[in-house]
Length: 319
Image (cartoon, rainbow, N blue to C red; front, side, top):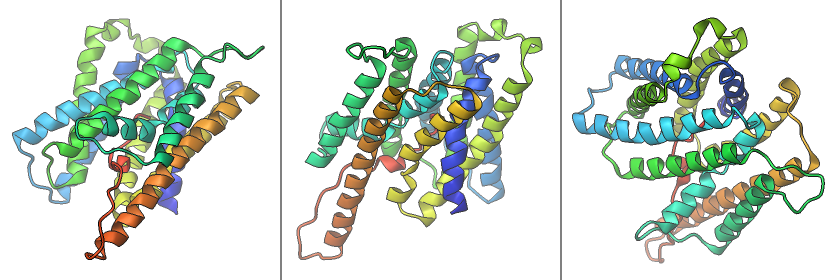
């Protein structure tokens, strides 16, 4: 229960921490420091626990996956929150299982989802379109489209990186590889930050106490929640663990409203319900398919039932 509370609340709160952080810290510099330090702590912990040294091919995978997830995923989310409320950003990032299912379906020889999941995809797309561009509703203003585009790009890159990581060579220690991905991604984020001129723009004297402590919170507590997530995957079922995908946005939306005075309209709440419902449909349908498949495997005389791609295996640390 404490583990689930951790990934629900801490991961849900990281969006608001990002919002506070990017107020005075460049987005890719924020991601680079956060993930490099957090990854180093994970790597050190795994080595203390006796994890063997990784091979060169494992580091290559870590840099590829880290670039997609840390730079493409988290870095773009950081950038988006300079113009987007944290709750809206979390809501759009919460569509991650949605995009993983979609791209796993579209890839060569991909896994076609069942009709219930397809209906969930359509419902989710509808909710995002209504949220981002409510031009036909009188008195309802649209959210920043550039920020929303950054979030959608982040989810696409995260989905590609997650699907790649499932097929790539990895070390046996999940904690070691998590640390490798975070350090490698942090290093690439530093490079992107330098190329974008963030090092020259960053004025440490202008760093606000709120941004600094948010940065610290993301580095320590965000990384800790990541470790708890890996542990929960071992002691609980993937279907249960994946429920963070529709709990985090709820936490983020209400924290933003309470602590940052983010305005909640009836339209936003209604679109949020549509999107979160779509994610719930996708996750519960996949969990049901996994249950049926497990039953078929336990009965070798019966035909096995194929299941959709397990998006829960992708570590959704966009936040």
